[in-house]
Image: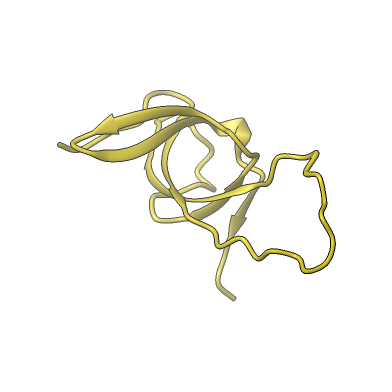
Length: 88
């Protein structure tokens, strides 16, 4: 089944990030980490700077979880995109 984004929504899949423990110091995390995600679908009202296949950075715990055919996606608002990672 193919998924499409509606309006100002973007459908993404989160890219798992490896966490590197810090040695010797226990830090209490107060801020939510940013997430890296690959864009799967872009709604028709989203700024054309975001395209399918782009890698984007989102604030932690963004979007609404969608489970289709055992694949996990997130639907996010276009204004939740913090940055787009581009190759030089």
